[in-house]
Length: 90
Image (cartoon, rainbow, N blue to C red; front, side, top):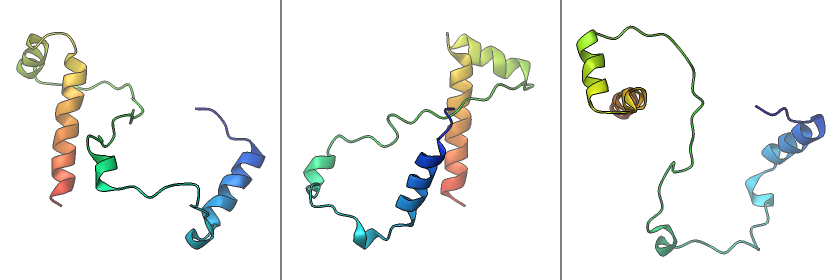
C-alpha cells in the first residue's frame, strides 16, 4: 500500500472534519432513479487477499477441485456468501 504524505494526510483530515452543509455541490447535478438503472454495487471492490494455511476435509477439497480450475476462488466465494448471509440475519 502506498504511503500518504503528511500534507495529504492533513488535507484529508481537514476535509473529513468539514461539515456537510459547507460542501459545494453546485457543479454536480442531482441523480435520478434512471441514473442508477444497471448499477452494480461493489463491482470494482477488490478485497485484500491474505495467504494462509487451512485444513479442509479431503472430500470437500476433492469436490471443489472437481468443479474445475479456480477451486480456491470458489472456496472464497462460498465462505463470503456464508459470511454475508450470517451478518445479514444477525
